Length: 450
Image 1: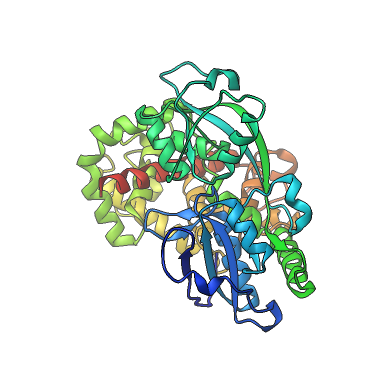
Image 2 (image 1 turned 120 degrees about the horizontal axis):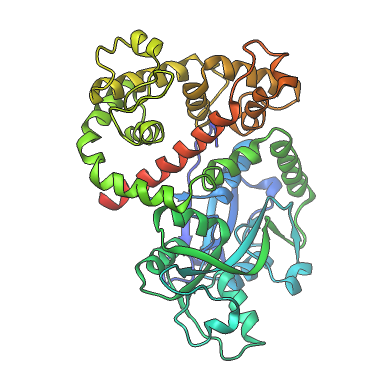
């Protein structure tokens, strides 16, 4: 999220044998008298995790970060090994609130529950080389691994009360790591939320979701006698981010692209990464140096446009790796549109031009997504989509809102009332989401190779 306040983040893994935990055994200072927000979470939670650079990330983390910026406090996270120890510490007021916990129903009355911001469906994940299990009975005697102390382990414990034969191993790995093991065939099953399974399928094509175990909601959890001042600020914060579209924007930034590609799309893209990308990578890197646009995003755009075919040509005369129109090729001074280096660099420069043309109020990553849509349908279509967004009291600076108005350009009822008229706005949305999905796959491949 966007913030100009610099905060110091201190992460303490209490309960894991590390030092410095005694200082957290006493209650925190009241919210009205503190200069830091103390937040408890657990080590393995789906929406609060360590990213490829070793930093904490996830929807829940970004929300807390945004809230702390809004109220002008630093953040200190206390990471517990399991839900029970986190809830016990919270009940003793050793934090102002907890995140990433799926609180048992029977314990809900001991705490104050914040607004729901995310609904999660938990599924059994399996390897597609094997038969899909139809019910929980099929898992008896099978190798199942789940993150230790996680919500998923709690779900299995609840099921075991009715099916004592069910067994599993609780391991010190995240859901992402277990889905990677599942893809390799090192384990038979795991439990993960449906979105993580969908995301994993972009990187691990053999990972599939079977039946649903349960569903849960994500919300912040507060001690029973939390100050009204803090609860009021939290409620006002969620009302604001919902009204302004910030919450939807955040959810889209993590989830928006993971419903676009089919398994076949992913399979053929990965084959092309091995066979064609090595010979083109230097051109994309050169384009990155010239435009400061991530070469992997440019490669994703080129694949979406031409499947990395330098001879690609449409019936309308759009040509080359980046499928440049005659006018764009002329404007970018391309002498030979079928020459890969020229075409890639020109396409990158054109995308940069579109990004720079957008109003300053459009921030990243929305700026890039809108530029991609403009690359597909022209900058005028972004002007029209922004005008419609304003007409419907949406935020024209957010991609999540332009995704709603761009398809309206295809409808006569709206196209007759805008500046540039009819356009295939739905195609711009499809292209942008597809490029985002390919981009995520390339980032993951690059991380594995580094």
